[in-house]
Length: 290
Length: 235
Image 1 (cartoon, rainbow over the protein chains, first blue to last red):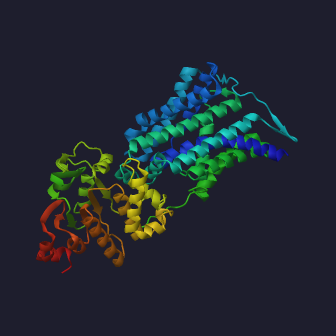
Image 2: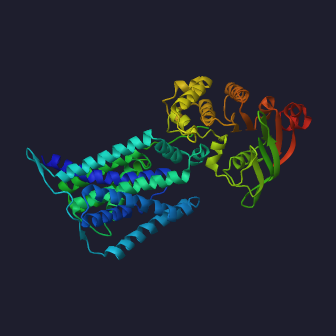
Image 3: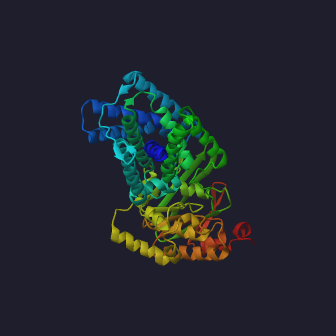
C-alpha cells in the first residue's frame, strides 16, 4: 500500500517536472539551446500566480494571468538575449542563458525580497480516501491539469499548421525558410508555449508546497532538464516520459532510501544517461542519407 | 522573368561571386553549369534571398527584390529545391507536401487537387504518404523535395543539383520530370554538375568558373563547343 501511495505522490511531482521539461525540450528542439533561464521563468510564473491570488482573483484567472505573462516574458527573453546570438557559436548563447537565469533570480530577489511568501490557498486541500489510500485532491488536480495541457500540446504540434511549422523549423531551419515559414515568429511562439508551460509547472509547484521564493526555480528547473535529457532532448513525448520517471524515482528514493539522497540520485541518473545512452530513452541517432 | 545584374557576393574576405549577370525568360530552362566551388549554389541562394549580396540587383517579374524577406519569395512565385534535398525527415511525406503549400491561403479543395497532381506525377510518394520522409530512398527524397516545392505553385523553380548522388536510372527519371514540369508551364533555373544532361534539356546555359561567367549561349551550341566538351562533357 505504501508503494502505491508513493507512486501516486510520484505522479504529482512527475507531472510538474514533465510540464517544465516540455519547455526545455521544445526550445532545444528549435534553436538547439539549453535554456537555463527556464527554471526562472517557472519561478516568475509562480510569483505572477501569487500576486494574482493575493489580489483575490478566481482560480482560472490566476492560471491564465500567470501563463500569459510568462509567455510574454519568454518571448522577450528570446528577443533580447538569444536572437542576437542566433548565428554566434552555441557556447555564447549557453552562457547568456546562465546569465539570464541569474539576472531573473536577482530581479525577483530585488522585487519580492528573499523571504518565502506563503501562497494563498486557491485549492482547498481535501484528501480523498480510497480503501487505505489517501490521495490529496491537489495531487489529482495537478496530474489532470498537466495531462490536459500535454494532450493539447501534442494535438497542436501534430495537427495544426503552426505546430507543423514548428517541427519543420526544428528539423531544418533553412529548408523551412524556403517553404515561406516565418522562422522568427515560429521561434517566438515556441518560447511562448514553453514559458506558459513552465508557469503552469510553477503554479502547481507553488500550490503543492504552498510557498514562493526567488530561488524556487533552481532545483525543479535542473530536474526538469534532467527529465528532458532522460527522455531524449528535443523529443516532446520524451520530456513527458522523462518527467514522470524522474518523479517516481525521486519519491521512491525519499520513501525507501533517504530523502537526503533523492537529489543525488536524480542527478546521478543524468550522469548515467549521458554515459550510457546520451540520446535519451526516445532518442535515436539520426543518420543522414547522401 | 528573372534578371540578375552585376551580382557580387562575399563570404568574409572571399569574393565568391564576381559581378555576374544573367537572365531567365518565361518558359525557359536555363542551366548554370560549372565545377565544384564555381559559385552555382551561392547564386541560387542569393536569388532566393537566403544570402545577402554585397552588390548587384535581382529583378523578379519586373520587381526589384532587394528589400524582400526570404519567406516572401515563395508567395511571389519562386520555389527553391535546395542541394541535398533537405526534406523534413521526421515528418511524413504528406506533411512535407503540406509545408510546401505553407505560404498559400488555406483552401482545402485546391490543396487536395494539388496534392493529387503531385501524386499523379510521383506515384511512389502516394504509396508512401504516411511514411516519414527520412525512410525514403535518395531518389524518392528528391521527388519529394521537388513535389514539396511544386505545392507552392511556383512560376519559377530553382533546382540545385537534383541528380546528385542518384543512380543513373533515377537521374534519367529526374531529368524527365524536370522537362515535364517545364512543359506544364514552370520556368526553371537549374544548377548541375552533370553538364551533359543539363545541357540536353536546357534552352540556354551559363558556364561558371570561380565566380565568373566564362561562357554563355544556347544549350545546343554549347554542347558542340570544343572547350565545353573538353572541360565538362568528358571528351
